[in-house]
Amino acid sequence: MTERTLLIQPRDPVIFRDGKPFTMGLPARSVDWPLPSAVIGAIRTRLGRNTRYDTATVERLKLIEHEGPFLVARGEKGDALAFPAPADAVAFSPALRSNERGETPLELCRLRPARLAAHEGTNLPGEYAPLMGALNEKPAGTPPFWSVDATLSWLADGGNDSLFRSNRELGFGRLSRQRRTHVQINAARQAAEDGALFATEGLEFSEYRRREGVAGFEDPNPRICSRIRHPEDDRWADLEALAPIGGERRLAYWSEGEIQWPAAPDSLADATLVRLQLVTPACFRDGWKPKWMESGRPPGVDGVEVKLLAAAVPQPTAHSGWDLTKRGSNGQKATRFLAPAGSVYFCEVKGDARKLWMRPISDDDQSRRDGFGLVLCGVWQWRQD
Image (cartoon, rainbow, N blue to C red; front, side, top):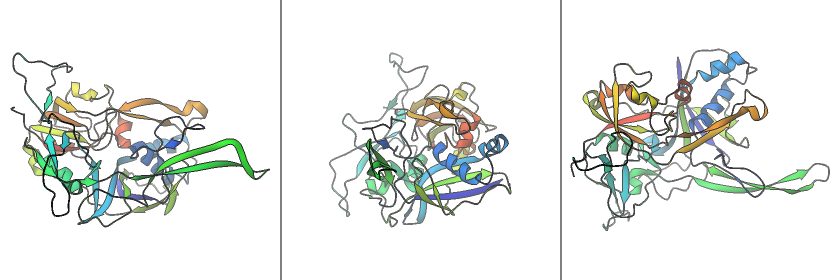
């Protein structure tokens, strides 16, 4: 298998459609970050462009394994990945003094499962434990992308005490958006068509405005980073330096690079209480939780048993799209609701939890190959209060 790390830097405001109607008066808007299927779909299209995309070729292309997409940007230590903020971290704004940069630290409370007393109960399904640890006040926002160092530090610390960090120490702010107004031109009259006025709203990579982020940030142009694995095949085309991605065929710069992928810490080898943090959205038959949890055996991982005890899962991510191997409306894919990136599953694990590191845990094979459900692992402790 050939392993390649791809870097994609959109030149134009890129649109990864949010699935809402795109008609007169309703602009085509992008989601805040592309789903794995949008990126691996573009990669497979570029690799197979020397073929006729016949049935056999399409099946070969669908076997390409994908990890990502992740944000990559330059910090104090060079180019590094960033991951979605974990759902078990709830931020509050305490009355503290600002640091030397004029930043006020946030209090990050750790959501942790708590055992119920004999007379206590909840409306949670099954025997899942409730999560405790948040303060009784309105939470503050955190950066949507945490740097790799902040993410690994959060996962490695299994304690229940609060952590104080500024937004700059945690990670990266949201991408800017650019709204464009378009008009359709009548070729014969060389004038605008009546009623053919529409708008698009895309993510702006080349004009990234970081109001919040890690110290020492130098690169104003973040990129999309994905890693793929595929069999050797001389029919695959070389990746172009400039090629489209997303809706409206907006152009992006494509290249291969050397990005350090985080390694599983040795402390996970003997861990029994393990957090599984989704770093890409996951597709589960039971909605918010994996179907394979019924047997406790993660797909494609031998010698590991997992028991789900609690979970922190935000609102689902809707996902649809088009099957380009089918014509017309037959190619429209059914909408499915994904467990969003950042979701955290508190589990009891038997075996070496390092085998789960950066593995896809979605229920079906194709979703796992597409990159849905990649997880990082951390430790945790029961909350006693």
